[in-house]
Amino acid sequence: MTTWVLLLLVLLACSVTGTQAGLVEKGRDLVVSWFNQALNVLPKFNARSLMTWFFHFNDNVFFTLYRRNCEPKRIVVGNIESLADSCLSSEVKTKIIIHGWLSAEDNYYSDLMKKAFLEAHDYNVITADWSWYSYNFYTFARFSIDYVAPEIAKFVEFIVDAGIHPDDVHILGHSLGAHIAGLAGFEMKVNVSRITGMDPAMPLIFGDESHRLDATDAQFVDIIHTSRYTLGVNEAYGHADFYPNGGGPLQPGCGLELGVCTHSRSYRYYIESIHNEKGFMALKCDGWWHFTHQNCSSTYDYMGEGVSHSARGKFYLRTATKPPYALGDIWWRSTNIEGNKDPPLPLSNITRNKSSALTQKERFLSPTIEDYPTLLN
Ligand SMILES: [Ca+2]
Image (cartoon, rainbow, N blue to C red; front, side, top):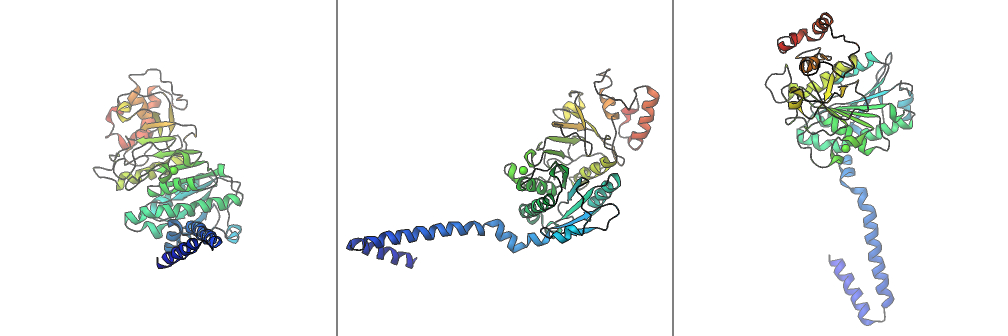
């Protein structure tokens, strides 16, 4: 402060004497030059870079590649050798799985999903591990996603530079991991084919679409809501939003609880859909009330792996209480059979005569007969 005052006095003295007018200009130019230099330097010390430096986000987000008949391999962004030594192939599609709060890449659900993908197809399955931050108080984990997401974005850009086509990249995230996927999609220079949000987290998620998962983050964004208003968001932020059993925290088989079971149902439904892409048939509808009152459009699609990328809007369906959760189209016929004798849906693989319907019921409904007795009529 004192320096500034002295400088000002000197400039003033010079201007008063009138003999040093050139110095005034020089002094002014100097101040302007300092100011411009400060502006140039400041962005390099913004909040993100400071946080990344302090918490080492770039060192503590890990990526592991899994392929059929290949050893798991850690891939390090910027390290070409780690890529060259891996089985990453541009010939197959890539699935990137991002876990949520209090979780890690090798936790139960991520592991099940990884195995299901590898069993179903020859994919590059990549797990993103941010457990260094996720095993913390929720507030810290939530705060971390803004800094974990750029690391995911850098990774995707790295493998795209190596030959992976963005159209072959599908990122799946659970809970806070869903928002990480969204923020990464927003951040990266490429537009990946698809992001799936499995019950994106609601607590402490505020702001516009640049602060959460939304439909602008990938070519196609689908969301499965299973604990809306508690741990998961209610709003339809994707291109296609699926609300199994209404999307609320009363998922069949979970009992009366506010999230832990229902929040993970999104994961469970998705994992099952990898092997049964047309198992979770869902109707486009304005809401659960409309769905239960048979007041929906005839547009349908499949929740999970089998969803069409052209699906748009909110979709509703029922599931069973325990695995297998998929009910095929049985629930649809049961809720619409009286009001619509000639359904517009192409039920090509399911004939509507009674004997085959019973076979379907046996196949799909055996775990849930007690829960949906009307389906047996
Ligand atoms: Ca977004």
